[in-house]
Image (cartoon, rainbow, N blue to C red; front, side, top):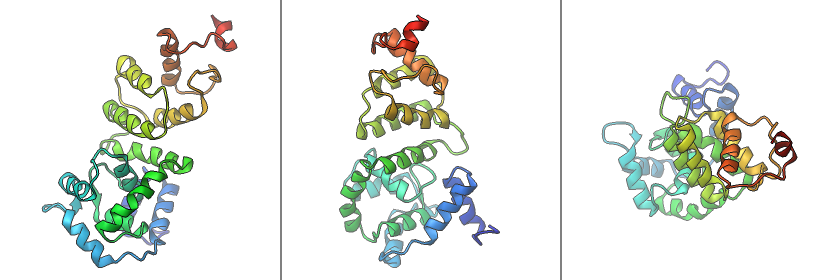
Length: 244
């Protein structure tokens, strides 16, 4: 608040969105402050009021359901995650007034028609490697329960299936089955972020998997699970064959 001159509410929101990382909060604050858009603020207010909860100054589940209906998309459609990323939404299934209006302004949207026209662009953003990584990392904070450090397992599995349907990873279903069979606990941020590195850098046949690499124990256990169940054969790997 001292450095940016932000109000307490704005400062708390920037910190929450960046998961209490101070440097990230500065980025959030300044990027929001610099947004200049042709979007009409009055029309955005009207749009916000259409979806706003009658008992709270926020858009909650019913409002989001109506928004999806107006956009002609399923609430489970990945485009809703991309839209939430643009809005820098702190929590799944809710938008504050600032998140909703600021996000649409940043996209140059001030009507439902313009929002619908923007859907193909938002879908295409998932194909951009850098944006996919940002959206993937955003999804962890967005999807977890308020006040929790970890992501509930069933929520994490749903998010992985959604995200890796876009950026295909052949082992995603095996990973989800492994977690349900062997782990059955909430997912840490470290496991969440490292899985993307694993999916991106280790080929599905595991030929370049390094058993001595600094992967979280859960990913090492997953590799063991794949070999034990003969899902992947890695006998050709020198590290493993020498140990065996």
